[in-house]
Image (cartoon, rainbow, N blue to C red):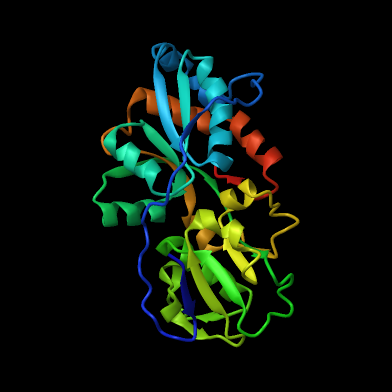
Amino acid sequence: MKKLISVTLAGALALSLAACGSSASVSTSSAASSEAASGEAASTAETGSDLAGTTIKVAASPTPHAEILNVAKDLLAEQGITLDIIEFSDYVQPNMVTESGEVDANYFQHQPYLDSFNEENGTHLVSVGDIHYEPLGIYPGKSQSLDEIPDGAVIAVPNDTTNEARALQLLAAQGIITIREDAGLTATVNDITENPHNVQVEELEAAQLPRTLADVDYAVMNGNYALEAGFSVGTDALATEDAESEAAQTYANVLVVKEGNENDPAIQALLAALKSQEVKDFINETYDGAVVALF
């Protein structure tokens, strides 16, 4: 349910991790075949040969995660490993099906969100490795520029705790609001100390943000949802998180498994494929800076 919060009021910020309706389907598309295995992937070829006939099921957001996995899929196929990619449109179900064992791994989230999810839901999920980073961006809605922000402008942000803190810090970096100095990446609306434009923060489930742009002045969106909606970070975003920011160093998107499965040979083969040169080249050539490889 929509919750409109005036940032001039010191309302308590509630952690929202409720699942939205998910749409799952097995991805059958694959990226163009790679010409040769990367050094890291090649180093696991012998191990991979022992895994011939193995199937790995991975839950992922459609963009960019499933697209990146499709590049890894070709590399794993060279080792006789089948990668089944199951796409979800929300941030809850991928973790739940990984916890239940319906899938072997997931790839859609950053570490702080994973930590928060485990704490709130009693799940036992762990990161296997960092893959990429997605800068948050401010995208125009009814207002097209940050140079003249309307008084009382409505700004939509992700409603999960970790991404909302990032969104608030990005707004602060643009001088739209001022955040208490020591709030860091745990910032809430209660940490706003100055609000010269009397902006209102509208908290929404992250996947819904692109559809709100006609109704709000601006939206702070995660890179994958902006990409899915057809936005270019290079030409459409009015501002993005700096590559050297605290957020950039903290919010790496990770490959996640249920605790105890980190060293499973199939999972390690998947990790090696995701950290291959082929995947890095694909990221650099495809996403216009909205996705940044961390290897």
